Length: 153
Image (cartoon, rainbow, N blue to C red):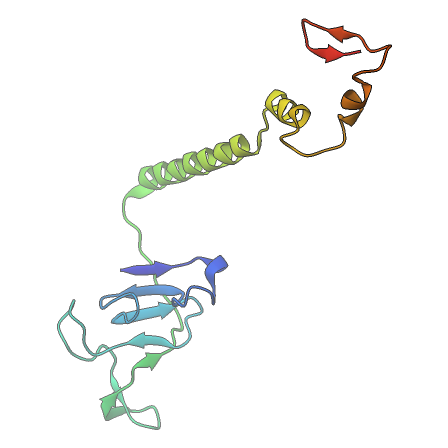
């Protein structure tokens, strides 16, 4: 089974967007597009027994043409789920936990160690003119150095 629902990758990944069954990612045996238009049903693959999945139609749309159509449009789709309310609640809880974990990792990556940042800023690792006054102040007669904190006054 193949499912590509990533809207961010639309057009960039070269993959079809929808659900595919059988075959390969590039050529599924049965493919239902996200818009339900131009869905595809191939006549064979290595997963299932060969044979047409769609009825044979002639040019007028009537049945009876020996060449089955490859493309079709869906008018409706019935989806079934199994497991009951407990399974759905557990799955939603797991999804919530995963999203919280991702959000916590993003918050952690955004958090800046302010003391380390200030040390890098003062040492010149981050180029800035913010602390140039300290270098200019050294050597002046009225400059006093605090030996404990290594700061100039």
